[in-house]
Length: 405
Image 1 (cartoon, rainbow, N blue to C red):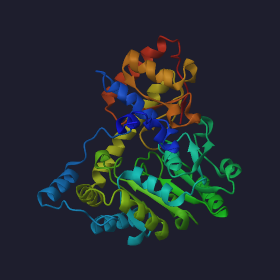
Image 2 (image 1 turned 135 degrees about the horizontal axis):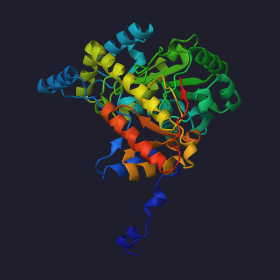
Image 3 (image 1 turned 120 degrees about the vertical axis):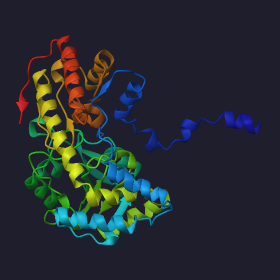
Image 4 (image 1 turned 180 degrees about the vertical axis):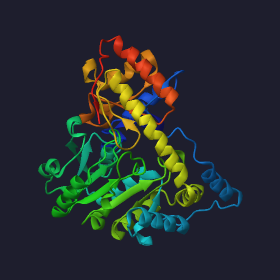
């Protein structure tokens, strides 16, 4: 047999790692690959600010390039950024993190991947709310762990509780991975419930991985940073970033702070896989922390106006929707249409050119819902609602629903 014939007999699919092959492609990207080829689509799908990055932040990055500041940086991030971040966390939450407790990452996505790989041994279980952001479970699986989902429901505002978590804890449970304000539901967790969850985690020796990327985007309430709660600082890996608050999604810059031993382990992986975050993004993040609060506050105020329009509009056209208090997503029920989440999203896109994300992309408990991102102009939101109402009327499902405050 010749070398070429041996090569032809190889089935490359058989060589893919099982844990990779078993992971389904992102349910979000499936629809965006489809709409990329369509004209006239109003997208309520991708979770991204419709604002450009504020000018002064862009200028800082441009200046760093023009001045030749384009080399590798320390693995943990440039000292200026780590210092500014430390000040920011102190001023915002009264949290003290030493330099050894801070790691700058390629977005919160890398931070989450690093946390999972640094903490999870093969077979370890990680508790995760359902529904949740699409990458939570895959990050655990890719680290060799087992995701254990915590079911939630609309009647309880998709909140988790110590009572729901405790029966799921086994001798294999290693960590709790949560994200509030929540994607896709916009849920904010009450401080009292988080305190009970922290107590439970401490009782069972669990690490808490807390994704707080939407912490700046809250309405009618205050965000509770888990690491500030009694007994949480010592066992919490706190993940944050710049994408949402400062409209910096494409800059890919985030951070992880937490116990020095865990951050050191995460940094070790980061050294070998990424080395360092792009220099220009780090310089831009310094400027965002120093001078970006006014722009961030203006964007949050605008999102709040859109939130009220979106949720009331959905209820008016017949899709019940509780009032989210964080992030920039509404999560209406489409159960009265008789369609699955995927059928609803696909048909709405094909017939009315409005893109939403099927709720089951975020977990089993997301079935019967769709995610609508209101980080788009009011003009487009009104137009999208008109198209959705037309879509529902054709199916006899456009009676007004309850507006839940």
